[in-house]
Length: 140
Image (spheres, rainbow, N blue to C red):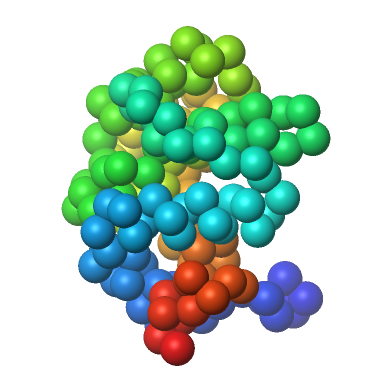
């Protein structure tokens, strides 16, 4: 019961994902940066094949791929690019924002390479809370 207390319902998850898919890249980039900042990260936009942001929290660095958020189906290639970006930047933490379906090979690759797929409940939790810039994501 306690776990479900802060978990958004299916309707809210679907609405949040649809609002994210309706955003332009500059809008989404701002929302992603703000969401990770709200979670205590320093966020830097980067121009790196496969990655869009570098984040730092408590001395740990990571990268986020978000540019393919509108893809109806995420395959393995964007995750390979993200993994290569992680290796080039010598970071351990990698996230990929997903609003569509994830292919089984992509999901397996993500698991093997410690790439966190931010999708469904996690998208709604991370992107749908808090700040004024994200208020419209909740429909308000």
